[in-house]
Amino acid sequence: MKLTVVGTGYVGLVTGACFAEMGNDVLCIDVDADKIARLGRGEIPIYEPGLEEIVRRNVAQGRLHFGTDVHEGVRFGTMQFIAVGTPPDEDGSADMRHVLAAARAIGEHMTDYKCVIDKSTVPVGTADAVREEIARTLAARGVTVPYTVVSNPEFLKEGAAVEDFMRPDRIVVGVDDERARFLMQALYAPFQRQRDKLVLMDVRSAELTKYAANAMLATRISFMNEMALLAEKLGADIEQVRRGIGSDPRIGAQFLYAGCGYGGSCFPKDVKALLHAAAGAGEPLQVLSAVERANERQKRVLVDRVVQRFGENLSGYTFALWGLAFKPDTDDLREAPSRVVVAELAARGARIVAHDPEAMAGARRLFGALPAVHFADTPMQALEGADALVIVTEWKAYRSPDFERMRVLLRQPVVVDGRNLFDPWLMRDAGFEYLPIGRRTGDAPATLPLALAA
Ligand SMILES: NC(=O)c1ccc[n+]([C@@H]2O[C@H](COP(=O)([O-])OP(=O)(O)OC[C@H]3O[C@@H](n4cnc5c(N)ncnc54)[C@H](O)[C@@H]3O)[C@@H](O)[C@H]2O)c1
Image (cartoon, rainbow, N blue to C red; front, side):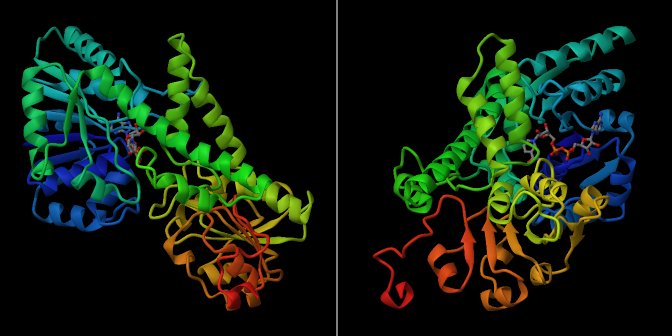
């Protein structure tokens, strides 16, 4: 099939590349000429495991193309995927400007049937707004051209986006038109050879499904984060609680890790947008507003720990920071908890030496103007002369470090761990003052081997 993907960001590029991989002919367009020029030179503007190979292969085999020409984009694909950004507006609602601009462009240039697919995360009612925008534009041109608007929200996870797209758990399609249903079924057939993964529903339900999914996941995270803080107060260990509840199939083991708050380009903005939409509909979401408040508090938990340990005035102190991206396996810094940590430590006069395996270029652009922020080439280099290590992102490369070396490099052997990477008792044995989230750090547990407990 011939597809156009409008918006070549994390979602658009992965969507375009994966559809091309299945043999479709795909044109990805973007208003960002620089991004398209880089892609034209074979440079991948984002870090996403497996993406580079798949883009290279499909470009080389002539199935994946990039451009900035909107007219060409509309002419090219029968299927027009809208995968532009939907950032939060000032009031928290989703900003639909880019989605409606894409719809307008389709209406301005289409001359034959188009199946327009909302892949961006958009509030309930957006498909109607897109349909109206195209209708208005066609009317202004004085022409009638058939089209359908479909909702096909994306559930990929950054860091595993290619894998998620190629082997989805489910494919949600909101459609109320036979022709579009047939096209969507045909397009997604190669992704579900083993079992049927298509969850067909009406358009509004599909739009709400995406927000409900992200809101549920954010809720699990905030719930566990609050449990972790409570566990600390009560002398319990959140890791043991996690294993205890995660083994219940009604609860499940995923998304139960306590940490220093959720971030990224989706959860924070989608939670805000859903809260805004619910309030507007006269049905305010009490649980979700508490989830958001809990997360705001949790993003400050590492700073609070540093302040408790070193005092309000941090001038003269240096902190090593491991992990800047909002989660491992991505270079995405949008709403990352590291941003709060860096800003708050710097505001208190601290010097920060940060490391991240993939997000350094973005971090230099983001924090480069702050004289207190420095960057290290390796995790160990960040520790040299630091008064404490603060771990913000759980990259695999941080999970089994050389503890001996760490202790030698750090000026004070203090580790503030926002991702609970290490065993508290082993850390204590190794001579560290270890400050994780919700872990029991007191006496060794009775089950520990005597040699370790000694
Ligand atoms: N990033 C994720 O993990 C993820 C997962 C699922 C859903 N989503 C949703 O998908 C959407 C896109 O997210 P993203 O992370 O890919 O965003 P992004 O910011 O990485 O990419 C959006 C791209 O759209 C381009 N664009 C904006 N207006 C345009 C226009 N009129 N024509 C052509 N291009 C235009 C921008 O230049 C940018 O390159 C959002 O609604 C997001 O909530 C994101």
